[in-house]
Length: 199
Image (cartoon, rainbow, N blue to C red):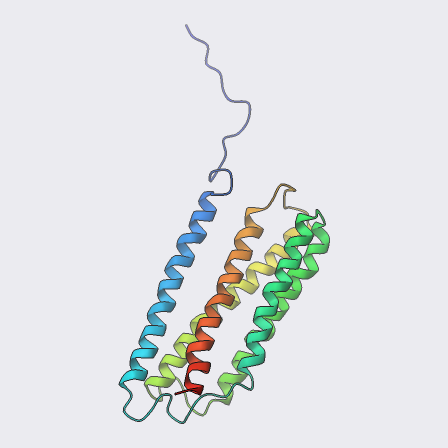
């Protein structure tokens, strides 16, 4: 009768290597979110093309808050890359301040965006422009909030030295998501704020 043997080490969960199930999950998430934003931007552009009295109503939106807020969000990606560089240099605990600073910059972006909303002279249900404006910027704001939460969790894990030296899938996925959020904002900012400046 043959003898039954078992493996001495546990089987991997979720795949191994760079293209793990977590990586594919993030790729699918960003693909669906990218399609969602594409639909929202298309609907915004369609409503603008059909508007009988100019788009947006009341003239182009002010860049007073939106432009510095955009620079802040783009700068946060650079700070995040500094944190990643420190992690790659095996300085996990020194990566935590960079991750926290990125999250703090995201929080400032959220507060400035909310301030801009309160400065608007219209509400969500005022007209087609207001509905599309709040929907488009609001969906992006929700993604920034999710990114901030992820960055705070990653900073705690970095402080606890929970990331392996050979690389962390979680940190990579967090970086990919945050850069995606920044890239989407560039498209939203261009569509909503820059294009109306030059009708």
